[in-house]
Image 1 (tube, one colour):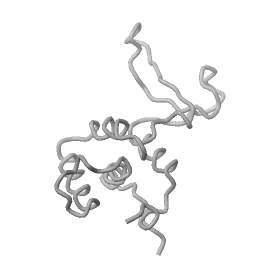
Image 2 (cartoon, one colour):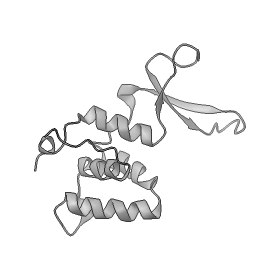
Image 3 (spheres, one colour):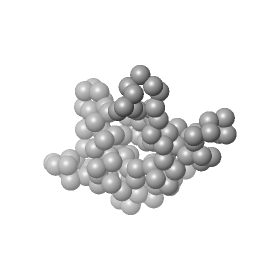
Image 4 (cartoon, helix red, strand yellow):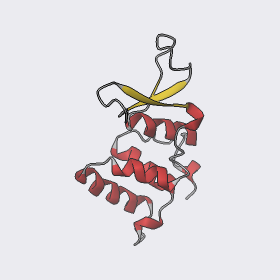
Length: 126
């Protein structure tokens, strides 16, 4: 089954939804001079000053390509709890039509399962 047959989100929309779930957010605007308009940020640890609030920042087009990169999806899956991992495996099994080896799934299939766990998968238009 081709992805456009069961999903009406673009890869960019899917990547953005996963990024938001993982903590990436667009910069609030010009009130933060160290962030450019359109940049996205995520809270992280400053290796030199752990007591100071620190943000990694990227342009939107530099966010991970969750739909096309299994390494990016591995990071996303690593954020799941044990219960969510069980749910992820069950959903992935269904998406892959019961194929025995889940590690043969595509990054897109992993992204779909991840978004379904978080109730962020958009249903196709009827």
